[in-house]
Amino acid sequence: MSLPTLAIVGRPNVGKSTIFNRILGERVSIVEDTPGVTRDRIYGTAEWLGKEFNVIDTGGIDMGDEPFLTQITQQAEIAIEEADVILFLTSIDNGVTEADERVAQILYRADKPVILAVNKVDNPERRQDVYDFYSLGFGEPYPLSGTHGLGLGDALDAVFAAFPEEGHDEEDDSVKFSFIGRPNVGKSSLVNAILGENRVIVSNIEGTTRDAIDTKFEADDETFTMIDTAGIRKRGKVYENTEKYAVLRALRAIDRSDVVLVVLNAEEGIREQDKKVAGYAHEAGRGIIIVVNKWDTLDKDNHTMGDFEDLIRREFQYLDYAPIIFVSAKTKQRLQNLPQMILQVAENQTRRIQSSVLNDVLMDALAVTPTPTVNGKRLRIYYMTQVAVKPPTFVVFVNDPDLLHFSYQRFLINQLRNAFDFDGTPIHLIARSRK
Image 1 (cartoon, rainbow, N blue to C red):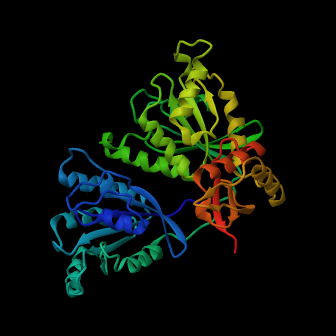
Image 2: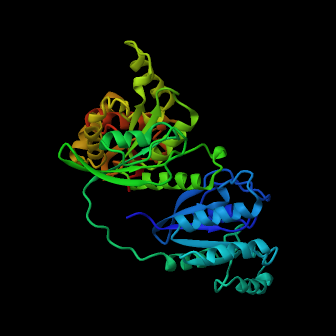
Image 3: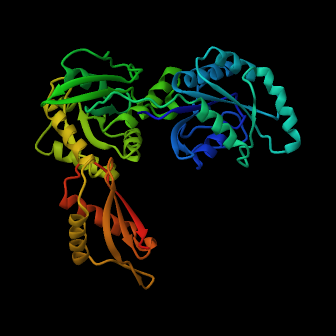
């Protein structure tokens, strides 16, 4: 089941990014005391009382040169579309403003729960001023201090009370995968080529696909669910409000996928935005396949494929585990190989290794390359066990976790890859003290 989503909505300079950072527990948005400065991450996953949920900071959705009220309207509409619950944020500093009332009018029309919060209530003596915000028509306003974190717990309790009750998805054993990539790399064309029919509009205009579209199909006696997503455009170049949906839905599609296919354009080579797009899937711990599309358009010799693969490995060093396939949506070159590759990566994502076998591999690794000594103290590794899948996650029990340097951790992960088939999936390795 996908996680419930909270959107933070309000006029500029009420502290949306500060609250966003507070909820996520880290500084992931740029915060300055100037309207409209948010240009960083606008989507994150947070936890409250042991339950996870998604958070959207609409202040990070830049509307370019749109008029002030139009920006507010568009940001609110995005929140209405994407969120299960909306946190309507205002500020005690200016009281109820015309812009607050404009946002309220938009939210009245939304068939979504709205929690009203008043930020910057740092001084307890000002709490009585909060009652003025009843006039917005959303019931009791929750006083907050984003700077000090005061009152946020009460507001989040109200948010969780308003989230829809968890249901039970119908049992679905299909392998779910999604295409991600910047606009115009040919994702929709790949969908059509795999399905053998025009199920998705294909165009050379960047950003044509607006929604995530799920399509089930069968191949090699297996059932797959394919999620086609809109291209993720570089943040500063996103102007049309519907493009914002594409960014959020691509990230949500990654959350729902077992395997993510990162699509590159062979004609254009690798761009910085390709790395950022792939980074979303890597951070989410999903299985990854790198798909180089439009391979038919290149003039090739015996070295072209090898040179391009070397380029990918240099530019995507953190994806050294991801297999690479060179395809053409136009000629359907090698597309018949994709379902089996996806299936294999999905199986590798859920692979479990018995502890006894793991520790045999560990002992062999220690014999080949003994543990390092740091400041006169040697790292001692006692044993290893697997604690999770999707992605495969292992815990090594050691005398001091600080002694497990990144380089030796990398060595151990490589030993696991040499011993077992984890092609296409990241591996998480956690060091813990033995107690």
